[in-house]
Image 1 (cartoon, rainbow, N blue to C red):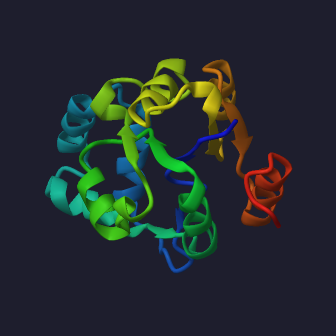
Image 2 (image 1 turned 180 degrees about the vertical axis):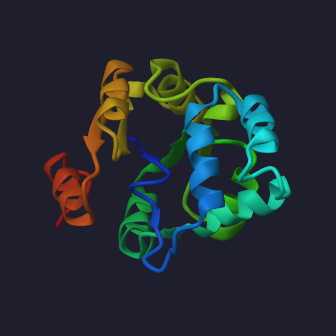
Length: 186
């Protein structure tokens, strides 16, 4: 029986803003982050990179956050329904440097009981342990959780941890997937 729904942050909850204009600082910083093993390495590389070294860390973080907007249908229609019956959580593979700004902009506490950021637990999806930690913090077993992500390897990681993983492709398909699991009625 499903008791919890866990989301990836960027993909099913947030997307690149439609009016986002290419920003070399943001794109460079995100590339550096994807190549970094941890926040310390990320910061050191930003401080030495020709494009990013002239900008304060706070400005880089805020610029990264400004790239992303809520998927309004998810926030306005789906999350309120899910919150009535399920515990909700987030697992984010990301840097702790942007986290306060993402949280300030999006008020995750409105819907989510647990927010796990990979840099804070030194694990990243698809490592099965990050899914187990998240379900435990929600007071649930992995088998009682559904995990939603837009990256297939992370969905497989959730499955390997004992969760039911769903691949997010778009809002309508997500509704159909949740309906097929009897989580919502469409």
